[in-house]
Length: 250
Image (cartoon, rainbow, N blue to C red):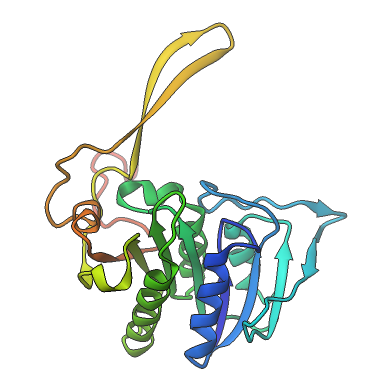
């Protein structure tokens, strides 16, 4: 099986190298194609720096990580997954792996995540994915995240989900303090909330705050705070079932 490994933190991210290592150790043929710069919050944006219609890529090496190819791509992670599904970096991948991200991707805020956006883009093209995030802005416990990624990938390979994304968030704790992996539903909010303040001439003031101290039990935010690595299945965008009264035939 071929795996396309990407992220939104950029080609030099420690987490990217850790995830590529996990994929290689699982016996996958690994192609790393990651942004040449940080694209956090880019969702599934399809933007790239093009020169005469060309997608610009730069060969790189990842020390100690046995990959088939490593590329720094002048594009967002969503665009990388979009073009990768069409064979831009070799054969069509069987999996899109994204991360390991710096900071959590929880709740409804996954909509805005470049990490998750890459995997959802792959899923819209029939390619299942795994997105992994380490829940701290300046994380230190990469060993914990790597082990959780290894377990999550093994589960995904043993339980093919079709065009579905497995979204994993890992608490920034030493391996011995991790309580385990736990299925979770998305919280109604993400890790951080924004409030609009003063609107002046040519500007709007925004303030950011942590989520409330009492997230709903069973959600990814609550379980993550309790020391669990959370696992949530996400469907790619699709049509909703239902009638449209008063519209059909109007």
